[in-house]
Image (cartoon, rainbow, N blue to C red; front, side, top):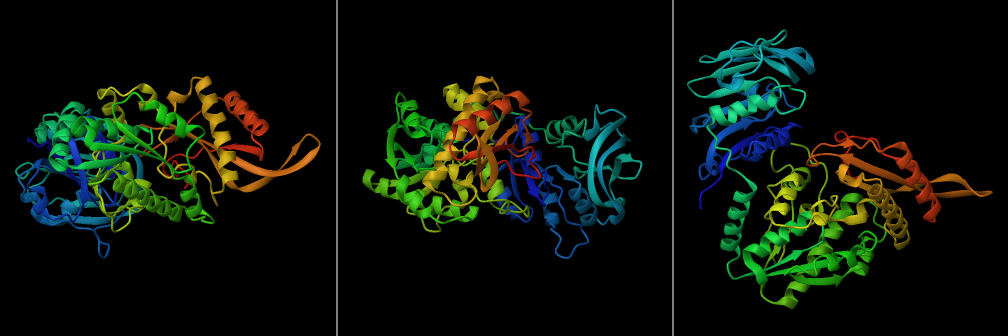
Length: 512
């Protein structure tokens, strides 16, 4: 099977590493993020077209600063270093790097010295985004200047013979006005990529790999009715048909009427669907637990236990499939590089060390918007494709503090009102994700002539493309007011509603 043309990003810990990947994929070029110290032998079996060295928080002068081996420049493919990546190129090729008098962070004007290679078709002067504490002060032998700023002599460099390039700024962020053109030049003019990585090619390639991997085996999949598991189910069904057994686990942490709706939604699909009510088991395991990481691990453990028990009933099941996505992988672990761990996701953080089933994750290299596009190509209904993301641990990570049936009931009712009103106001599909959070505090209120001391509900709504970054949604005040009044008047035990106006970063989308 022909392999997709691939760009590999070596991760040195930049907050923007995943954004580089998004920008490359927008050009229909497959890319993969790997640790900066990934063994070079792992690159050789791929259809490698180029390498990108990401930025990072370290200084090349720091003890233990992340360095890659110089042999990556002998792979015969172009290399682009961004920010820390440029400084690293300078050090590895015997140039000189200096600490800046002060960290340069924000917009700067870049002057193009050579309208060639990376800067072909770029304006003479253009705005870029800087974020660095060191800078290259002396060019390595064989390198030349492509661009400079008022403060930085070497804002863009190249070694034409070795096809090594460096940028002191970040072309992947929206603040760099011609960043897309610069990356396009790297991908297509320098790396000679074809831009052939499409949804159709992903479907064909994945179906072929799944058939080869599963052969005559049986697979179980947790079908929640959300976008990820639904797309995963239909893709697997196309590959292996009735060898797939979809298990819907009601963990007691679902939204109002969700268990009923999921079973109803997939009734007409030609899938083996097995509903399992394990809600009591999950709630017993979570009793008294407050720590969010511990919640996730408990849910993961019980989830797998239920699956293994159901798999034994089916007999001879070998594989467990999950709808894990790339952001889940990136945010849950630093195995991709030195980026800091943010939180564990249910799909990847809760798995026990020993599991009787082999794991299949056909979507783990995709972002959410890519999965939605994939679902449309697989003819899934828009009611599923357009659903807001819902975390694997469900309402457990939207109840801050202990999980109890009473607190679950309060959150379910409030969340149902919130989502219903967003749909009525024709706002639901303009928002990437919206939900309620039950806070572990109570506040004083007045209802009628009586003083109350009851729960606080936080409303969260964000706009985003893939969940890697997000901004809070500007919901009209009159809509927020109506939602607040309905929740306070209809949900017993709530006397205050607040709206979260945090963006990601620095906050995450979910509260836990």
